[in-house]
Length: 364
Ligand SMILES: Cc1cc2nc3c(=O)[nH]c(=O)nc-3n(C[C@H](O)[C@H](O)[C@H](O)COP(=O)(O)OP(=O)(O)OC[C@H]3O[C@@H](n4cnc5c(N)ncnc54)[C@H](O)[C@@H]3O)c2cc1C
Image 1 (tube, rainbow, N blue to C red):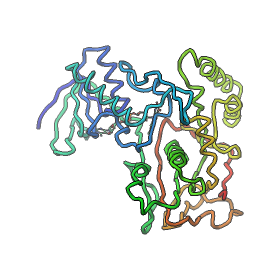
Image 2: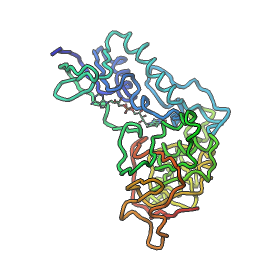
Image 3: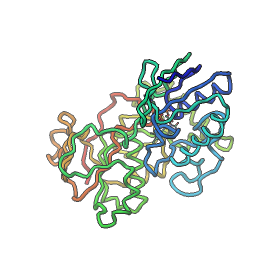
Image 4: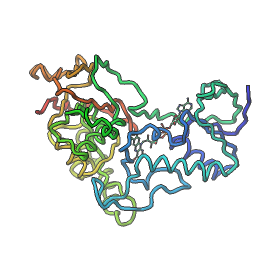
């Protein structure tokens, strides 16, 4: 078995692992090995759906020694007037450039793509299968956040028969199926990926009536206008921080905290009549939230347990209140429909609480 020797063995070449390597390179003389399952650096961005973007300004993202943002302010679209949000392709290209032009030319970094850390000081080549032993001074596990995206994990619910269930990655390729384009779309999930998907469909010309959105819980969203760096945005960004600290100091519970933050325009919600019960640090704009609010069929019946052709069955115990019409616990869906599944994706550190129960309803 081949034996490798290094000061730092970093598992993962996503943003966390690369940012750590960048700082090591800058502040030490250490020798570094970076191993990753993926074929290219960039972590989960390798698996993202085609229309993904950062949801915070590019200026906040990336490694210290290489700027991702070029300072451009978007002139059009849902982010108009705010600093550019790099697309997934731009983020991937950025990490590749960083690897090729900064890390590898230093002569102190060895990068092992398509290589899995299997523990016990061993790395395994995913395609070749052979194992290598690594002697290291420090092991850096940058996989700690456990970021997952829909295209790489299995749904937690059952899919029966020929129900058509796909991750959002499939959408941009629907043009190839011109004769089989679905007449309706059912979106599962109220996180950032679900929101991106609904906004993308609406912007792609799908009528809101053709969208059915399963939102087990609504989310509070950070207002991107309050997160703009630079002197020109001083009032909004520092004013936003002031509002945040004031709300923390004055609120007596979590519900009141978010009421104050909403009054200060620091957080947004899609439905004014539904109190959100989750906050995953997803960031959005007023224009995007207004667009998402145009979808009228929102199914608030808990998590999906099973998908059958034309029918959704929800988890027992998380169904709507008894006075809910029966159909709301297993709504019939227009057929043929395509279900888009941002199930369980995470975009930040979860922050959950037991606030007031949200109104569960099927609005039609
Ligand atoms: C759609 C989306 C949008 C986001 N937008 C923003 C944003 O705008 N701003 C922001 O700050 N954050 C954003 N995030 C949060 C994002 O999770 C982090 O910013 C960051 O990209 C996470 O990087 P990471 O290195 O921790 O994880 P990952 O990118 O998941 O990288 C971990 C790497 O470890 C590898 N790995 C895991 N286990 C092993 C093993 N056993 N052996 C070898 N390799 C292994 C994986 O292959 C992967 O490449 C977003 C997240 C998502 C999903």
